[in-house]
Amino acid sequence: MTATFTLTAEPITAEAFAPYGRLLAPEGPRDAGREGYDIWIKPFAAESVARLQVVRYHARPFVVGMIERHLHVTEARLPLAGAPAAIIVVAPPDLAAPAPRDLRAFRLDGTGAIFHRSTWHAIDAYPVSGAHADFLFLSEEATVNELFVTPGIAPKRTEVIDLAGGGVQIIIDAGP
Image (cartoon, rainbow, N blue to C red; front, side, top):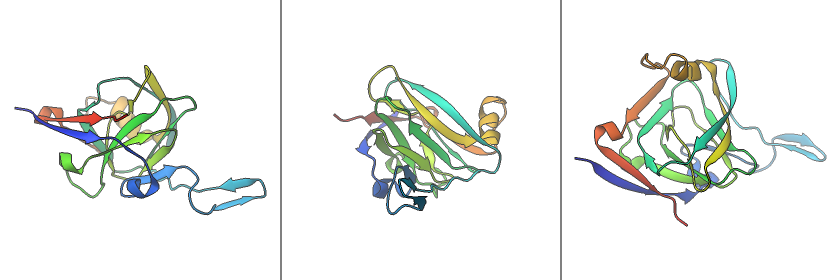
């Protein structure tokens, strides 16, 4: 028997996203800069070499099958120019295993996000329209290698929950 839950995607704001991370956008007073040049410093932490990637998320049904969290790195996703809006799904980092009611869906309309370390998140981002959405993706080599270079070995840097395998179906309502 499958238990079905629906998440309504909401616009992302700094306040709403604060339990999960920060927005990759100018917010508050600048941290540094000079005339004609402002800098907002965003926290990024990695225990191995940082890895910058371009990731293409293909259109798919708005169903979350798995969530994960990375224990040794923050992770950032920034839509590239021209990318359609996409939805990300997150849960607080302080939970051992989030329940469906702990998940929230946020719509990225040109704004990126950086997750706090150990923030639970859907493995995928979900393009709202079009065939795909491209993202600049910042992570770390050790975590990425563990997941993609040695995929048959149980990860140590990442925790994964197979919602679908546990009889839970999370459906995202993308809204208008």
